[in-house]
Length: 600
Image 1 (tube, one colour):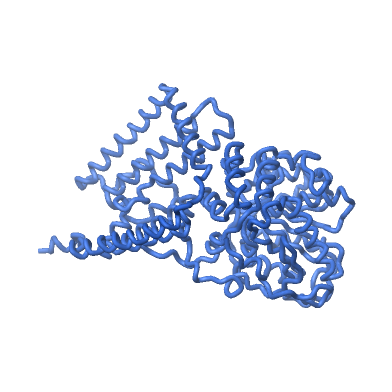
Image 2 (cartoon, helix red, strand yellow):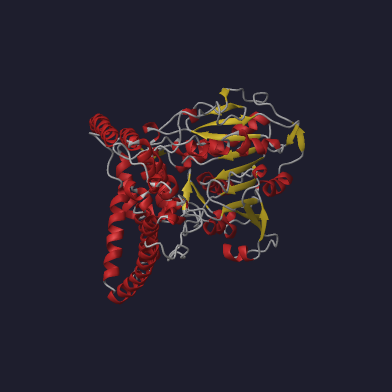
């Protein structure tokens, strides 16, 4: 006769569990007292929080105003619940164990990987009831009438935030992995999790500052951003790095890389195996890269034109001094590409043709379809943000990081809530997430100009709509051969938005669409063999990206070799490799320099 008790779960010893909860209360009281002291002058309320509440309340009022649609949706939801109740009852009675779920999870949804979500009738019910409710809310919000496209986008975005937040995986009592961990550790996971939570609240000074990785596992210049090179020029806005060559000969025209200043440059030089900088040097290019200053109150009046004059133009001047070459090629990533486009138009107006070829990675110049960041860039929120940064003179890096994390809340917020707070574990070491947490600040004047003139008014796409350093600029005058790269799953710079530049510029243009998103779709070294890209060799002009895509061909792997095949012939003949410091500019310090080490 088998031991019927052998399959029963081992519940924690009550005295041990009580001891853990007592410890959690004591440590929590200490952490709470320290946090309250530090957060007495906590940061101002986030402007998007009020916006979210107002948007969602308005949407639900419109839903209630259409009783017929509401009744139809309720009927559909109740029908789903009837089927779920019947299936769950049968499974609890040991019947119909092979029944198909009433509603299925998306294959890419990693929240419900624990087998208990399917094997246990109770947890299967919790999961499916959540999915039924989520689908009901999505349909209701999508059916809201009488709103413009901008409001509809906000309703969809904030609706998804609510849906993601209410997932049963986010709560200890409805997450089987957390319950299992609680029993096995006698509640120690909850004690550690509470300590992690209070420490994050202290670090965030009243705002949640969720650790996404082990911040002690990496050090810039030691095991991340380690490509050898020298800082050969610097000013108030930047340090210019010249990287050491890895080939005996190089193309005559140097390549100047203009990264975004919303983040730090080393996303392009994480580690040797996934470094775009290292790979480009291996193809025979002399690589220069801008490391932007992490601004503080001294930079409050620095504007977009300062990033052009003291940024890109100063760097082009410095490259000429360092190499003797007056002609360069340039690459701009994200807002760095937006700046590059404005700079090319400014140079065109001045008769300056030193940039002979330009590459744009996930860069927008027409902001009419600028993705989910538009949720945070309406007049109300921009005005509130301007008021918020007026005193400091800059936007704190944490605010930017939180905004970007919200675009992928399940991956970048809730997964760490579960791991750090409910499971009581430390996040693993991950170079990409270390970079993501190494936030930068934004000068007040530049931020206001960028949000208003581009996101709100879309002036960059209008001939003469923007004036930089006293010169009206017109993107349609750009004759520089240009290569545009976008990624198919980009929430920050959607590929349809990036493609719009193809119909603005006048010179030869090439477009490539990569798989994955804003980061992984760009930083995709060929050796990894990951993802894919789409090319279209027809060379005819397409009005919109979808038309281009209809005639495109899918190619496995990285887009980097395709870009190199385009850029190489535009980079001049081969010459002897250049060693940093051997030209007209002497080394100031070793790469990655000191500007990148300044933390927010």
